[in-house]
Length: 190
Image 1 (tube, rainbow, N blue to C red):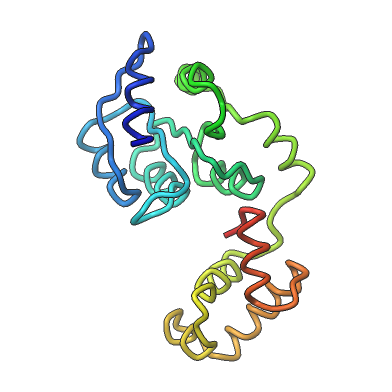
Image 2: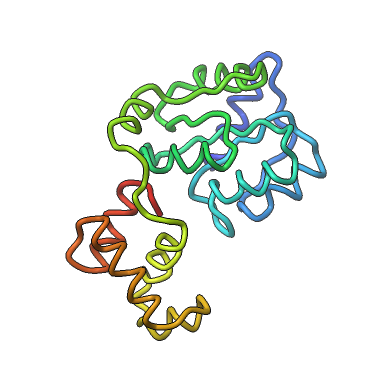
């Protein structure tokens, strides 16, 4: 419903034509290849593949397509990860529709557009202290899997999983893995 409402609002703007819509992140690259848009508007929370993962895949597959991330999750960690994944703009959903249309026009001119409040928070918050592998293990542990189950799923030894989780717990200043997952999610690191 939200996607269709955004498409309808953007369709009312001069010089903006919505040529395709997909409901899943893992459909983004195929849709972009089929329709060849100038800009892709992605949400962070998408089934099949997150908007950040979809942005990275789209950036690799079609680097000329501009990517705008629009989300309710205005967290500095998400902003940083989105920009590292190839996004050209990052806006929160509570921004006015005119601001979104302006951001689309600006990224087409080659500008980067970032919600100013979120940009300031990202500077204060700093980068994620977690390595890619620590994020992967911590994310996989979110469902309550045991170290042995994680080791099998991630093709690691149980000791290596334990070490990654211990380091992630330390870096997030958490008391346990569940709290580390919660903190990392709140900061946008997962």
